Length: 381
Image (cartoon, rainbow, N blue to C red; front, side, top):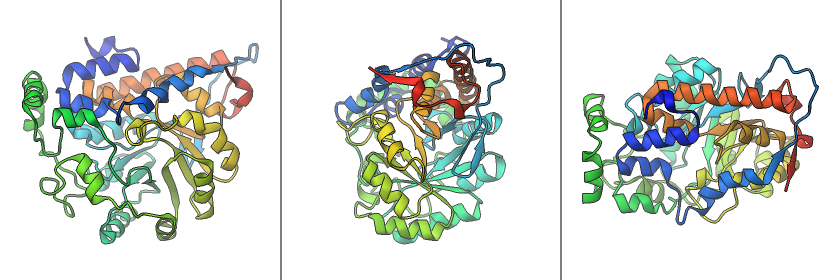
């Protein structure tokens, strides 16, 4: 299978599976516990139908939106995700370059594999920093100051990961950073030599946001251990309120799943929220992000920018979320599979296909601009 034969999310996933060692693929692909929330994130869209309008004179399509003070050419942004150079040696550089080409937002994670300074300096695209709240308060302050010095405009605090989700696929393969694999996992790496050659012939894998503060080869031997041992489960609303004041700019909470929490975010001065269950990787058995979207938009949509992620696989999924009131939609696995499949060329093809879907579907819906989408365009079964 070649990149030119990839036409949708599922094709990129299959190509990524062919090219990645099993433990790495399963890290991207998997969710928590029985993965019921992971599956629900996408299946929830099936219960919502689009209602097109005809004869509206659709000629030109305007996909631009403004969210968190950022003007984007697309209603889709590339969510910050961890460990990208593990999936392809170009990592965040490939994704940032694609975001720049398409005029949309991207950001680096605390577990990113390229420094926030490099991405902010080299790529002219709206950027966020996805922040994890550590037990070391000095580290938290230092990371926020680094983001400020890099002129990153949007702080995105992840609030649904104060401890690691139970990702049993990783436990079975022995996936960890650095690698400490069981025999089955080692065999998976041996069967994908091209990935291994790329991994060892390019710059050494690192986590530049954390390397000066945390030894990932020591006590935090796995990503699960990092979440469980390094992050602060006592983080509370007062802590976040202090962060909002210190940042003094665009600040959003990623991982909001209730209207009450959305209201609290407004009260402490946040300018945005991301309705998200971390792609089904944290609390299994929780509702899908899409299940909550309308309720949260109704509660706070006129007071704060409501963004949305988890489960997006199609342009029609994007339109359904926007019609319910999301200001913009984040994608993660969608571009990670493409990155793993073919680096920057893969991410660019994935975005080309998604944008083409959205434009085509907008015409079929009879809408010329994103602002025209509303609740009249959807109906739940």
